[in-house]
Length: 424
Ligand SMILES: O=P(O)(O)OC[C@H]1O[C@](O)(CO)[C@@H](O)[C@@H]1O
Image (cartoon, helix red, strand yellow):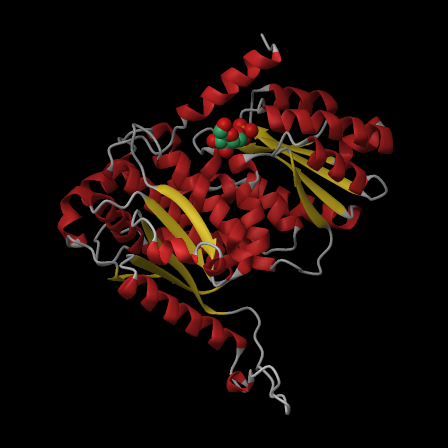
C-alpha cells in the first residue's frame, strides 16, 4: 500500500548496508528485549486489540452521534492529535457531518477555552475526556470547567450519561472521578504510550463519532502489520525510511520537513511531529520534525528551503488519487490568462506543482527528498500509515540507541509551572 523512494535523496550510504543491525533491532522489538519494551503493546495491537471494548466503542459512537450537535474531545498530545489527524485527513476540512468535533483540554489559553464554552452554551453536547495519566493539567483544568458546565446544563444524572472517560483501566485521578460519577469508561492499555494510542479507544471513539469506519481503520493496521513483518530492507519500507533518516543525519541534516500537497493532512503532520519529536528528541540527539503543506507554504517557507541553510531534508507524503477533483474550465475572454490550464484537472495541476518543486529543491537547491506515496486517503490507508510510522519511528530511534517510548524531557516545564503556581 505504501511505496518509499530514496532516488531524490542523495544518500551517501546504501540503505541495505544496515541490514544486519536492522534485523537485530527488529528482533529486539518483536521479542520485547529492546529499550522501553514495557511500551511495545502497539506492535501486536492490530491483531490483539480488545474486541469487546471495540464493540462498545461502536455502540457508544452511534448513541453519541444522535445525542449531540457538538462532541468535545478533552485531551492533549497523544490524547487528541491522532483523533484530529484521522478526522481531518479522512473527512476533509469542511465535511458536512454531524456532530461537530471540537478539541479542548489542549491549551491554557483563556481566550480559546472561553470561546469554546461560549460556542457550546446553547448546543447539545457530549464530552469525551481522555488522559492516560489522568492528571495532565491542561486536560484536568478544561475538564473541571466542562463538568461544571454539563452538570449545570443537564443536571448531574444526565451529565453523567453524556460524559465518557478514556483513561487507565484501574488507576488514576480520572478513573476515580469516572467511577464515582458513573461515566462510561474506555481503557488505554498500560503498554501503549500516548503517541501510539490513536489505534486504541483514545482515537477510535472520537473517530467513530465523526462517522469514520473504524473496522476499516483497524484493517489498515493489520495489513501494515503483515506487510512490515519482514525486516528485509528491500521489502520493508518503514525500516528503509528509518535507515534513510539516519543516513541523512550523518550527512549533517538535523531537521526533517514532512511535506504534503493536501491541506487536510496538516493535522496528520502535527500527529507525526509528536510521534517523532517525543520518541527521538533525547540524549542530545534526534532530527527536528517540522512540516509544511505545499504549494501553500512555498509562499512562506519556500525561499528558505530553496536558498537557506542546508540543515533540512524533506519527506514528501504523496497521495496518488485525490478524494475530489474537477476539470478547470475554459473562459472565452481569458482576461486572467489562465486558459492554458483549461481542460486539465485540478489534481493534475497540483501534481505538476509537486514535480516542479521537487526538481527545484532537489536539483537546484540540493535538498534531499525522501518520498512516501499512499494510494488514497481513507480509513484503511490512515490506519496503515499510522502503523507504518510506528514501526519507522521505533526502528529510527533504536538505530540511534535511545529509548523510543519515554519522554522524560516533558516533565521539566511542568515542574517549573507547578512551582510558580504554588502546587505542592
Ligand atoms: O494522556 P495524558 O496522560 O494526559 O498525556 C498527554 C500527553 O502528555 C505527554 O505525557 C507529555 O506530557 C504525552 O506523552 C502525552 O501524549
